[in-house]
Amino acid sequence: MRVSVSWLREYVDLPADLPAADLERALVDLGIEVESIVDLADTVQGSLVVGEVLEIEELTGFKKPIRFCRVDVGAANGTGEPQEIVCGARNFAPGDRVVVILPGGVLPGGFAIGARKTYGRNSNGMICSERELGLGDDHDGIVVLPEGTAGKPGDDARPVVGLDDVVVEVEITPDRGYQMSLRGLARELALALGVNFRDPGLVPAPAGTADPAYPVEVRDTVGCDRFAARLVRGVDPTAPSPEWMQRRLTLAGIRTISLPVDITNYVMLETGQPMHAFDADRITGALVVRRAEAGEKLTTLDGVTRVLAPEDMVICDTGAPNPLAGEGVPISLAAVMGGETSEVVPGTVNVLFEAAHWDPVMVGRTARRHKLFSEAAKRWERGVDPALPLVALDRAVRLLTEYAGGTVADEVLDIDHVAPRTPVVLPVDLPTRRVGVEYPPARVVALLEQVGCTVARGADRLAEDAGEVGAVGGVEALSVTPPTWRPDLTDPADLVEEVARLDGYDKVPSVLPTAPPGRGLTARQRRHRAVCRSLAERGFVEVLAHPFVATELADQLGLPADDPRRQAVRLANPLSEEEPLLRTTLLGPLLGIVRRNLGRGLRDLALYETGAVFRARPGAGRPPVMGVDLSVINI
Image 1 (cartoon, helix red, strand yellow):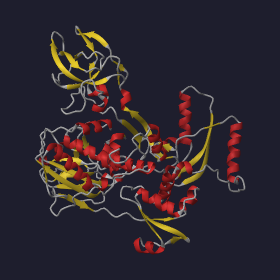
Image 2 (spheres, rainbow, N blue to C red):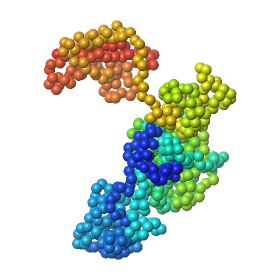
Image 3 (tube, rainbow, N blue to C red):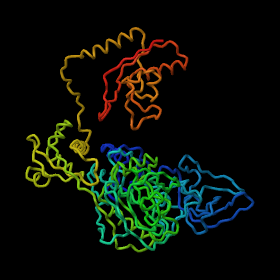
Image 4 (cartoon, rainbow, N blue to C red):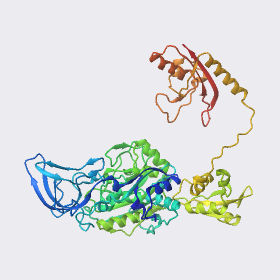
């Protein structure tokens, strides 16, 4: 995940002079892997200035349109005279202000700029596009600064185009999905640096109303335990996304598409709540949220027609007939990607925003089944705060009406089946016993409350609030209710990890444990080592084969029909469909190694393997390991 420090500062009071090294250290100390910290000002070397186009001369006689421009760059060129620049872009006119890099400068990627003669004219510098500045993928035209932008000709253009920022790229571990947002990272930095944090997820938002914003029925409250929606009518379909929003999305690695779609992505990065925008006029009936019917198809936004599985969750439009007898036609692969038939198009004037809470296991399996790892799916499978939908919707509709007009409907849909968090009973001395650092009870409580947990101490409060006893094994116990944004906190061990993490991993000592007294090797271990040593002394080489075999192996080995080694355990998710069984004898995989060596011209072979074999047992929950087997081959 990539975020800009200026965006982080909107939610956390980072010191103005915070060095990049201190920022990286704070993140690493919290257990966050930092991929890179890039000062954008250093990506462009030399003079990058604001210029005002004075004159444009159209050059003819070439294969493509070429323009010879005279640009006022103030005193930045040392003379104060207009700068002569040849440019092929056509999206600017005299009087526009542009971004100019003067000779001697270097653009991202090591592209050096000089003075040269081209198309019969002298060109001293370059008028830059977004791609050339590393700000985006747009290379069709150069950057034209909006009216009212600060800065006069000759001023440094870096602050004007956002190249005065610092971009942080972090790698988020699968158990900490809350960090995949500005909200989560800002909270973590506030804890690490001891500064103020403003939570964008706790902003008041309109509650659900008796009349829904749009008729919706949720058929599966396990796969979707909350579904919220709001409708905005009469927006300007030509309204562009504001420049600051496009810049932040681009720096985060997300392509800008249209204002409604950009808003959903922006709110997702800001709060961590994935959203979807529907064109309300392209939906013909009520919506139904359900599991897919086997064989149903949906063309997603990437243009791929996907065959759905019964475990997939879909949002369906009941106004269209379904040939497979399922109610409604799928218009969105829930929590993963929307469908083409209801997407926002250039003419969309009525926008239906959806924000829901989906089952992480379902989303993870759906994303892998369809090989569709969208930004939304990455967050859902890690866990998203179920308290966010209404806040995210309110933020989205406010942004849309601010920049595209329109009217927000008074109705708010909120179908809420979210179960309250279950308190976790934590012996107050468990962090000390597990980590080896003395954590006083008050310190444990304070650290857990910093995370956002609600902590109850004492027998009376535990009995009253959580129905728990006040002590475990004679030790005081805490009743800890994790916050809604931390689905990873489910066990006492998780809370112990949080205490150690926030108190500082550097405080945990490195102490080797004392080995318990023993009686040496068992008779079985001695026998096993003696056999292996004897084989090695006779020139045999030990090999290690994969425990997976093909279904036809028993026939190839000529095993009798009643041989128990024919009853192999089949894997539900094998690495290869050609070898879906667990071995019942070491001979098959060992012969495969022999064949591979013979095929490569190695004739002098003496191999052996010792390892586990697996025998099927009716009614067993998992395949039992039937001891250790030994196979030897000598050629």
